[in-house]
Length: 393
Ligand code: ATP
Ligand code: MG
Image (cartoon, rainbow, N blue to C red; front, side, top):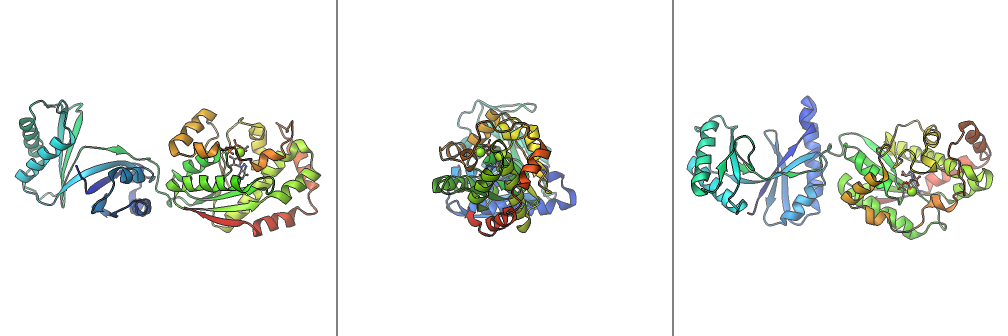
């Protein structure tokens, strides 16, 4: 069956009352964006509260489904056969032809569910159910009707056109990106932060990202890996501007002036401060990290409290209660895992102390940071001013 149309069903957007159109428009915008990268020409539009994708000419079915499965807000993708002609005999014939082609193995139970959105239509839905069911049974005697738990739910909707469909392919769920402000993702080359970005984008939040690199201690390949990860997350979230901050001088300065076992924590605090400032300059309203309680020394509750204290913005940590394996599973699902496990060095691992503090004392950390007073402001300023922006699409 060559479908020319897809009916797009959403879930949560349906609860938005008066604002619903805003969410629908954002969804259409994101669908258009996703289909720009698919060969062929497509129309996405809204018609009496339903969203349709129309293929104008030939296209690759799998590619379209795959692209739509990355658009947050979509609950179901239904390939639909559309009939302009509303003559009931014609509908019957088409329904039989549809079943014939889509279900070559006839041993299934079914139920017809008709809907008459066009109230002028002379055949009532109950009548349509009966007559269409009969037509299918007559054409394929091996089938059976089961109104309670059918294998196939055959839907026929009489609207401006007639929609015939039964397949429902799951979408990613969530809310359309662009309906919930913007946040700044602290993106490293690891497994966790790309997953964290994905999860927040799934709730409709636009994503910017910041990466701290430390040349020559970290290589161009480590940076390229982060760019690749940002591109992979962008397949779901839409384009991500990635701010690459040169962190070398700040890192060396901290290494020089502060106790080595506090280096990671103090470094993290400066990352948060800088990320927040870049976020603010770009209309971001929150920060996102890939932290999860207890995963490493810098993610104990004490460490999290210590890095949290330097930010005014809310810090979203969507993975906070996840086990590593659960995070790994999502990274496989969204396609970032293979890139994340490439071996290039991370700027945090290079100066890491043998025995970093596990339960940092806030008073002591603040005291240690006083040793940085002379130059740190200017260094932070320079790091922000010299950040490079890479558009990841
Ligand atoms: P990830 O897998 O995301 O790297 P991780 O388990 O390695 O996480 P850490 O290295 O402790 O954890 O980093 C915690 C969080 O701090 C990361 O999830 C990320 O959000 C942020 N982060 C760490 N290093 C960097 C960096 N070089 N640039 C930007 N953000 C970073
Ligand atoms: Mg890391």
